[in-house]
Amino acid sequence: MVVRNMRQSMVEYHDILWDVGYAKTWADSFENIPNLYSARPPLEDFLVWRDLRVIDEIHWYGWFIDYWMEGGLLRDVFTNKITTPYHWNLLRQPSSYSKDEAAYDLVVGNATIVRPSYDPNCVDKVSGGCKPIQIISAENLIDHTFGPVENRKLAKALEGKHGIDEYLIDESIWECIWTELIISKKGMKTFVDSDGITKRDYNFSSEILEKMMHELDRLLTKYSTDIAPDYWFSKHASKDLVELLKAHKKSVKDEYDEVKLGGRKLTSNDFLGPRERERRTRTRKLRMLEAILREKGAEAHSRALADIEAKEKVDHSDFFNDLDKKLLLHRVDGHTKAAREGARMRKLNMTGQVD
Image (cartoon, rainbow, N blue to C red; front, side, top):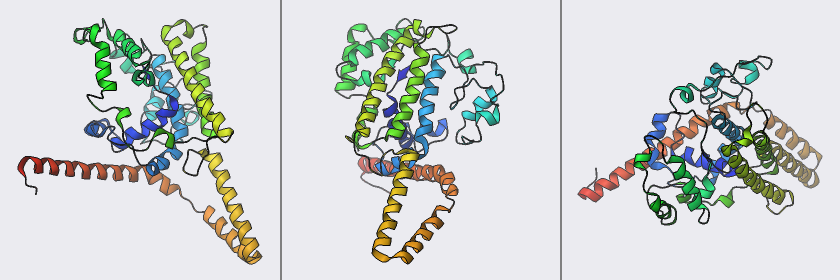
């Protein structure tokens, strides 16, 4: 199982969504694979998406790890409770059912005793089940110091496996291949090849960083235990996972401290989270009203206050309900235009003529 730092996962996930045109189906995603990592999305597009999704995606990150570590055990994303196959299928269709429509207490019921069940794909299609035999750090794999060691871990996990071992290259050139791919950047593009704004351009508020730490603490507590029936910490994969998540939490905690101490200044374009964004909006309005009262008098102040209250009553739910559709159409249109231009240029290079 390849595990990324949670913070960077929030960024990279959106990058991939952009690259595949916000595809809703496997077929659409597959068709857009050539666009992967072509360029990082503009910051403005990322901000629109992340404020709507990032807190939920923190839950999905933890759910992903639980799913594989527990061999495909069906759990709810937001409560972590064992769930039913019916509810599981609803969760797998987030573009068809909203978070509220697929809520655990609504579909299953908090008082319901649920018999554990597993993803049929893990039972019927994966030899040995879905539990990972090795934990790989995506960050370590591309690191110029730790990369060769992580690469070797990955190769060793494949060694001796039926259907794979016969295609595995000789051990003597494992590090050479890693060097060519990571250092010399040969082969297909990866997330480290994306162009555009840097990781530092994405800042997170203490509110969101707290939620990340809370989820990481949940995972660390769970997989550090060594009691029945799971005896997690007696398993090699669990120990590697815990070591990795501890490092991830430290990096998030360091950033949290930096934000709280004012070392990293946040702007309105950053990951503020609902509470911080609301506080800043309220403060800005109060300052504006104070300035109006001071400069234009009580009557102008009353009119401005009434105008603000009227705007706050406007229902913007339709906008947010349609946002995914608009983003999808925008991205698909952009990729379509790019594909047409690419085809036009290829024809020009081959024939010297275009339509």
